[in-house]
Length: 461
Image (cartoon, rainbow, N blue to C red; front, side, top):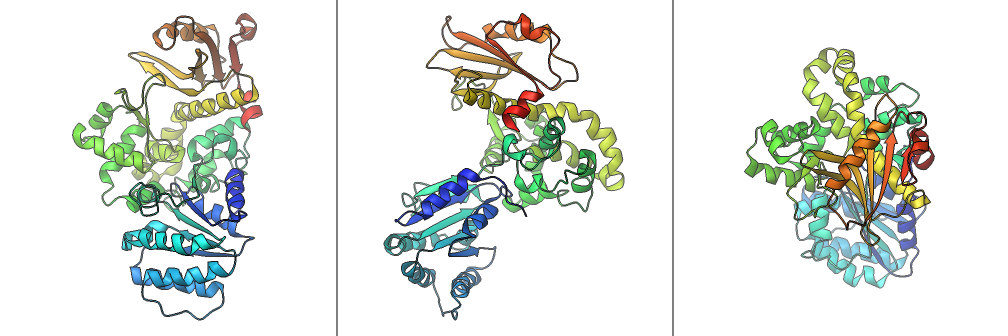
């Protein structure tokens, strides 16, 4: 599999390994996000020990760990009975030469022995610290990594010298993989999201329709049951969580709406939402002008494009997909795609605004996010508290060019956004798939900026 991007992460890891001190790095993130590929690329030209843990009994895990160390140095496997002994054996190796040691899926080891972080702490304090070697602990269970490795209560707290919370690719990063023209690239990204495994499943020499049919809508396709597999990996009983995700994917975004659609009382729902948020299946949004901790105006969304697509189109249509996948695509998916892609296009527009800020095409803003209150809503609002600047942005994925109607609509909403003093500096931006009516740019004052797909391609692709 071709290794894509991750330049900043590789630079960080390489710089740490080159130091004259010992290093304890923590790499974590959602499943399928590319952690193993990153570490494999990093280790490829360095003396290293790589151990991939699995869901097995503790004794078997320890035996495999020691065997991997011995195999790396072409030695006979020593007889070892405890984790203290296993880590002491590793300590002999890091003392003799500068080594990179990677323990992948560390949470599987912790699940079988919750004292393991204490053993690793002793190894770090007494053996790794006396060397110039590097230990990397990696895991897909974000909650375990944050509590058992990074958390204040963990024996390893304060020992790490660096960490990488690996995120899915942005649209800009994904265009290194997606070779469609810009409009189809956006449609494709709305389906795969930025998860490397899903991006690389598509054959970009085929049409988007062919890719969806062959990689998602076929019962034998690699992605047909992927979200269900992910949920079963993380949760004992995923049925209610799947109902919640389907509710969110079909447009029920407030807790009250989700409870009604999923048939779950509001009391237990809060716990389920927190779990899904902790597992990074969903994101919680509040108006950009509100405090995330204090605001009760919550909306939930599925942050990953592929999960959003699957729960919107695949899960509700499984029976039809089994019998006639092409009919499901043509009758249920294709007509709804413009609305579906518009959700992803708003995320891409936010990425576009940040890119324009970096290039100086827009003023500096500290935050960019959605805003809503009552019946009013603005797709994206940028805030610059120190300079009392505010940016109002509407995003349109429509077949018609944008004109003065949208301009007047956006102007009419600004007074409802209660932020900053009356003398605040207001600017405006429009992001449109189909461009703008002739002459619109000439009629607008200097505090308006217009972006079309050529700008998306110029700034992000």
